[in-house]
Image (cartoon, rainbow, N blue to C red):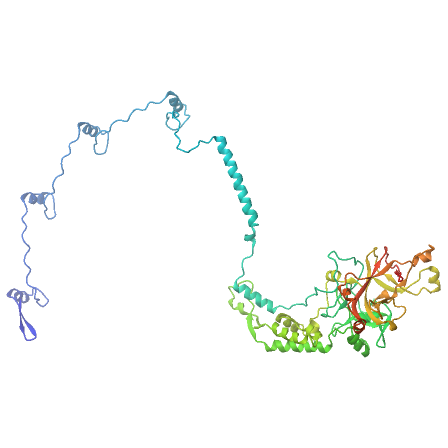
Amino acid sequence: MTTSPIGKEHHVHFTDKDIKRVEGKEHKDYPTSKTHLPDPPHVHFPPEDIARVERNHKEYPKTPLPQKPHVHFDPEDVARVEGKEHKDYPKTLLPEKQHVHFKEEDLKRKENKEHIDFPKTRMQPREKERVLKPGAVKISKEDFFMHLKILGFFGILFAFGVWYSSGDPWEELNKPKPKSLQQLYQEDIQRQLQILEPALPTDGKIQLPPEGINSDGCDLFLTESAIPQSGFGVFTTRAFEDGDVIFGQSHSLEVQGMDIPIHAMLLKQHPHFGNVQSTKNGIVAKRNIEIGEELYIDLNDMDQQFASVYFDVLHPLDPLNEDYEKADNIVNDIMEAIPYATVYETPKRKNYKQRSDRKKNPKQIPSVDAGRLFAVIKDALEEYNSKLENLLPDTTVLANSIIEKEGTAQFISNHRSVEWITKNGICLGGISYQSSCPTKQAMMEHDGGEGAFTTRSVAAGEVIATAPLYAMPVEEVPVDRNCIPAPVTGVFLCPLSFASSIQKGGGCDDGSEECSSKAANANYQWSQYNTGNQSRNDLSAHELLKNPMTGWTIDIIATRNIARNEEVFVDFSN
């Protein structure tokens, strides 16, 4: 088939053979330009290959492979194969192994089955000594063990030193794992949401020794009041019912032209926690009083003049009702002004079944610290109104606690534990006021008068009771109130307790029964447990009379063992 160019296309010339193939329908497709392939060249095989194909092989005949060289075997190998000594292809005979001669003792060991292994000859000890290297030293067995013991001793010593210097080896394992950021975040939320109670005073004026003092049988104590920075208050360690007499009828002192019972002068007032009132029978409970409560007098039960005397003279450090209201307004205004953030309390245990419960109980917490704002306000009030300053909180958490308690007045704690009271207070109710009848004859004639009697048994040297002191000018001091001169001239100090009813006692020279019954069995002593007494030499007469509630106390100390309900006598001449 040939082609010739015709314009842009090529003319195709078919051969006669191709035309015949198309006409003879030898092929269905259109004839192509491919010509008939030439026949393969003829292969000429040698006669031996043609004979192999005709006899032994079906495939296309191939030239025979060259035969392997003939192997000539030794006669002994051929004999071994014919004798079937070996199944493998015959090999030359290996040389025989050298015969081993065993000793008789080894053979006996095998026959007696002393050893399962094949008997072996015993190795003979080397005749020649081992040649040591230059510088090597031969060590005997005894020296080797001695060096081993020394090495072990120093190893134990080193291990002990490491253990001793590093501390407890289990300490690191017992240390708690560091908290995750999620745990710290939740703790911070819980800390801001918690409601705190007022902190108990730790730096009060009453400082008892670590072992404490004997206060068995005492139920009324003098210690720091729950009203902040206001001085002493009176706490009870027993319960009283409504109408019970707490302090019996006692003497009165004249203050700004008004006669006030001495125990009414001592007690604090509170706008919400009033639980006692002053009557002609003494200080009486106006409701049920629980163990650990502070005794508060209710000003609504007193004359209006007493209220002015209370804040102006008796307790000038106590906040007014107006101060409580001002403090509440300041706290509420600041807490409303600061921004808040919404947080969710995460449950302690993961609840995989109820995932929607994880974001329950949304809470609002302050996103800024209000403590700095309160600090600025307290610094400004320090000079102008210290009573209001003492009512304000220091932190945001305390401010939230005040709001939860519905005011600063309610936030003041009216309860203390008995343990705290006995460790931080001195017995005030160790003596009571009764009729003093030293002899049977005097009892019959009713001229025994008044006296102070112990409410509990006291050993020699122990505190019977303590007595707060009230300063009065010498010209106003009553004669029969057992007042003692102050460290400054022109001022006397009168006890605000039943110590004012103690009778004078003295020495007995005649040895009569009447004389011995009125012998002195106690004395006055500046209280060594009241740190406020250290300022008694620093104040002038004007300063004492300006603040007559001095905060000083005296203790009535037993000079001998005194039984319960025994009258107390003091030798005032000493």
